[in-house]
Length: 362
Image (cartoon, rainbow, N blue to C red; front, side):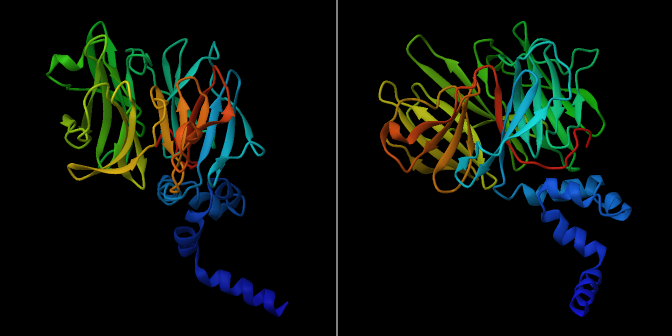
């Protein structure tokens, strides 16, 4: 009893402020939800917007990633355990938002939030799979309606630490730029590029990748029936202006790039050099690119895929446009470095995310 009383005294001496700011912010999001049940004071402190953002910043620096697959009625969450997906401990989720068909696309994943397109209506939904809170962002002015084949979407954080959704919309050979504030729940229109070459229907814009105040997009195009190319554009979120970013110095024929973040630095997978394909991994350092990895000769499996960094030992998670999940292990040679993880999941949308308490209305 004496030891128990001393233990309780030590805990009480810590103080609630220190307990929240130095201990509870480091717990997994599901554990924080359980801590809210301790007492009314904890419920109040752990339910604030400031705590959710602070907690998210701590959690985002860890490797506690999840993989989610969304089907017609349910979602399936798989832990990414060390260097693989754990299929034995998946969590089944009921989707809280209504839709008239099973076709969905995950457009963006950022700090625990997913931006989802309901393909039958084109409506976009911002959803936190952990808390099940969602926000339908389409309005009567047709803002928030998306065509995944033509449009591009990205999350970012503005100078006031508010969450924003950027939507590049193409229709009838023209292009518009809209920005949605999650805090204010309002859309606004922003001036766009002057050069008409960026508007062409044949161009394929990637969804954006936010890094250090800039949202980056790759823009792929076809030169002729034998050759294709790619551009890299950056949207400065403070100035709300686009700039063309120099690509790494590689052969330009049949070039295709895929962006991803590794330790909060922008990286790009480049596939180039038809018919003998080469695949490289580069890191942006200031205005220069540094080559990180040179892949062994493999088939061009990176084309049409979304690549998500998993761990630092050379393994990556590759999700194709149909939701199939494969692992890319650059420590292996030839085609052995690319193999399926979850098998075929046609008609399901997949993405990697981190469980947080961030609200779609934050």
